[in-house]
Image (tube, rainbow, N blue to C red):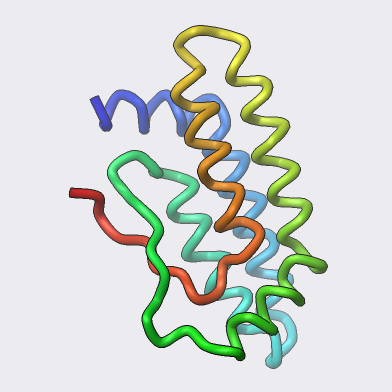
Length: 124
C-alpha cells in the first residue's frame, strides 16, 4: 500500500514539492553560512519525494543552534514551503483517493517550517 501511495504522491504533487525544497537548498548552499539550511532542505526534499513509510523524529543532539536556525529558516523559506504543502493538500483533498495524500501534506507542514534538529527515519 505504501508503494502505491508513494507512486500516486510522486505523480500528483510530490515531484513539485520536492523541487521547491531542492531550489531552496541550492539557494541556501550559495552562501557558506547557510549551507546547513541547504543540507536540511535537501534531506526534507528527498522525504517529500517518497514520504510514505518514513517518519520524522527529533534529534537528541539538537540544541539552541537549531532553534535559532529554525527561526531564520522559517522566515527565509519555511513559510513558503508550508504554503505550498497547504495548497497541495487542498487540491489533493478534492478527490477521495487524494485524501490520504492531503493528510500526508498536512503532516509535512511542521518539518517544512522547522527542519533543523529533525531526523527522517523509516517507520516501523
